[in-house]
Amino acid sequence: MSRGVVLITGASAGLGEEMARQFAALGYDLALCARRVDRLEKLRDELPTRVVVRQLDVTDDDAVFTVFREFAAEFGRIDRVIVNAGLGKGAPLGTGRPDANRATARVNFLGALAQAEAALEIFRAQQRGHLVIISSMSALRGMRKSMTTYAATKAGVAALAEGLRSERIPGVDVSVIYPGYIRSEMNEHVRQQTPFMVDTATGVRAMVAAIEKRKAKAYVPAWPWVPIGAAMRVLPLSVVRRLG
Ligand SMILES: NC(=O)c1ccc[n+]([C@@H]2O[C@H](COP(=O)([O-])OP(=O)(O)OC[C@H]3O[C@@H](n4cnc5c(N)ncnc54)[C@H](OP(=O)(O)O)[C@@H]3O)[C@@H](O)[C@H]2O)c1
Image (cartoon, rainbow, N blue to C red):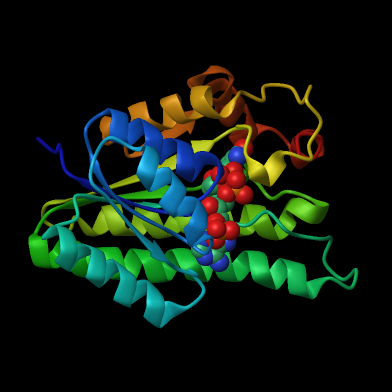
């Protein structure tokens, strides 16, 4: 018996792929999308519940609506949408890589906006649903150099989520997850001993637990990110700049 249907974007790698595994283990059916559909098909064949996969580039607004509507039609409902697809490209502003920063802004902010629009269309019609936005600890303050645009997009999506929560849409819950450092494709080039980096399964277990509790906000894993988050919000920028 299915516990419900969870739609995850960016499910072909990293946190999205592991969330798919863990939600399937909890008994959820899954609607999975990403650009690399071959990886989604392989994942589908390994999972114990009903899984439907679609190719989707979240920067294609029309395709986001089409794919989300197709998933809703195929399952008859969508209980939770996890806005996870993300890009960690970036370069210091004014150093000749506006393309990298624009690509990050397109995927992480405009892509998330399209996903939230498409999800809310379904949830308003159903009068129920859980929207989950994957932000980042880097959203809490401005970050320097190659992180500047990325952190700004993650602050942007967190603000989007708070605005939606403030709207109190009947039957709709909104959660923002702020992961710390969790091993994934995005940071596989980052050295092994990065402080506080946890393996993918451990980090995603903390994400899934927070999502299942439908928390409005969660810094994950809680240790050490809850105290770091509290400190980040009040520390002077001269200290915060050493974190990113
Ligand atoms: N890992 C961390 O430590 C960490 C920390 C804070 C926040 N986050 C956030 O967590 C989310 C997942 O990141 P990750 O670490 O799992 O990264 P990842 O391993 O690089 O995976 C990113 C996923 O996003 C998908 N994606 C990228 N561009 C896309 C596009 N244009 N359209 C559709 N899908 C796209 C990728 O699939 P395709 O390439 O197949 O399309 C892939 O499945 C991101 O939002 C990231 O910002 C991660």
